[in-house]
Image (tube, helix red, strand yellow):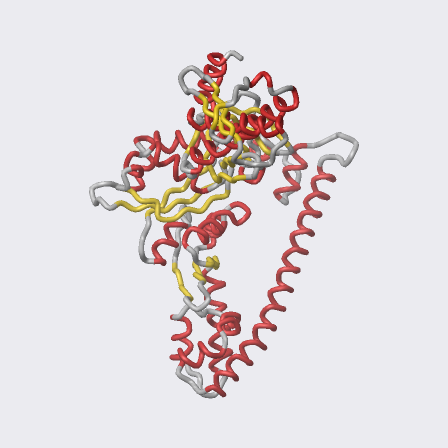
Length: 460
């Protein structure tokens, strides 16, 4: 048996796998004891002992403390196979423990790896000596990696699966962006700037509220960098995901207004009992405040911890008016009490139904019987208002469908139907609701509408 070669192999395994050398030698001794017990057919765990010289690899076997004149190669094929199986199993256990110790302490840190392959939607990434897994739910939607592509991700979790260590990565977790800012913005790493709150929809948009403990340091400006250099690096790493950085404020009203930017807020009414903020914006700011598919208001709600409801001034006033008319018609309720409810953020009959009897009795300082009457009347009115809103919504959808059908019919008729003989001037006239164009000025206007007016098209 070449003991020197055995020691070189142990040294190589210890170096490549990150396993303590002495632990491998101990495993070798235990495997030799198991092989001896197999050879002699004994069940006594204390019968055999083995010592391996860590320098030259000499193996000494003892039986009940006395040296045994037996060489490892004399143990036979079955004992040798047992020795091999025990060594493989113990080496795997040692490697698993080593990975758990190393990567368990690195949870939440950003690592760089190399993409290997996709396995049932999960991305396998080689990080140093460990094979890590990025589940589909932790990947940025629409992002794909090829073999040997560089992957930057955060260690999300490390689990002991019994026979192996599972290391999970994430690029979709909000803390991944937090770690990227710590890398790119020294003030964040030094805790001069603190990321107070964050809301993220991976691959689309992130909102982040920051504050500075140093009055000389502009939290938002430092995160953005000169001409956006710092945030551009992070956005590029996230493949163009939008990042909104807003200024943190202890006042919920100011924070909500900041979180809804770039929309301009007119008024904010907070209802602490319902945990809801009613935000009033102008009609021209409504779509901006809500965002595409409600993304802006949804992220603002998660960032601030409030249930944000966006209303126009007309809707806000209508809700208050209905509430006032409903409650002042009850004996014992006056305008002053209605104003008190409005100050508490209850601005519609639906709110009265939600907050319940106990809150009304306590806040308005009224009798239990009167409070029950208020809740009953508000609930009845809420049903009427809900039905009106449903009918209005159906009517609006019907009108929209009719307008679309009418426009399609006009365009089809003006462009010659299905015969392909389209008349651009007639189509433009149909859209404008005018007679077919004839003079030069009208022809120019028709060309502009149809994309023929070069200057107008460029301005658009």
